[in-house]
Length: 333
Length: 108
Image 1 (cartoon, rainbow over the protein chains, first blue to last red):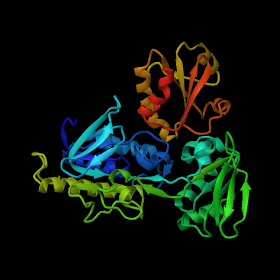
Image 2: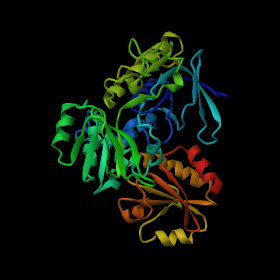
Image 3: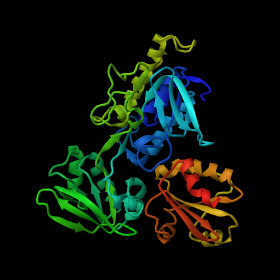
């Protein structure tokens, strides 16, 4: 049962969702944020930045800021203006009629609770892809890691591998050279997708070496990682490399399973938005990585969260559903 | 942090774990670990709800690397549940309250 119908429900709490919460709260729309629940992969309260260390490109932080600290600030700022949080993960949503309804386990009782709102902002983000090997799952936490910043420390003096060829892979590899003796970057192609600056940094780092045209076929080890079986995709040659750690950074997949069949998505599952943050369902808005596979930055996610808040506020006004004390966008924005 | 949370070090670990009359859930953590920060309030809530049978203990791995090595911790957060001084259960990675309670329930 739902106890009240909210003006705005926000699902997800990365930079997009929390920025939407800041703007909605300041517009007196009393947003409720269902923020997700703790996890060591990338769908958790605070989003992907919770698994990073120094964020050096977020404007305003001249000397950089730690990812979790930045997200703590976003959250506190929205709370200051009256945003409320539920630390739980939405299990299903019904967008076929208004008010929109989403269900999530009650954080204290575990019982399913219904949350209803006139407008919905979807900011569920994206999560990291894994290789999908049985051995990878079995050795998670025993040398296989989803969080370089959490676990790099344990690989001091070790030889380790990072799989992937994009910015995330090179960032992880560069970060991990603080601890590891060598970091082997394993990439299935001959050239990297990563930005020039990250490539230059990695090529200059004496601890980083590259294994090109190569895929990982198995993780070797009974109780901890002892090596990787790899295959060269050009020569088909198979070999084994000795490493004690494996970090995977092969890309992301949007968290949109909740909305399959309800919201329009592209072939990769990213939500399709038009005219700002609008989705195909009137009154449902999307922001952040869940609808962006191009930029995927904290600042662009935050910007789109702001757009979703303004779009949803205007939509509520146009439908005569905004609270009586808010008639226009505050000018101090 | 809950008032009766134990802060363990290499010097105090064995005595505290051996002498505890309740279950002890040891949380290996570090200041720079985001998921560790996420589960800290969840652990406090669990400790508050089960204070008669369970205590939370924290090991800062930056300051107590030997303890992390001894228990072969290679990922944080790692939680290890001790009963009568013996490890009973290991939970690796941050999890929500419901999932943690489900894993702990057989021991509570």
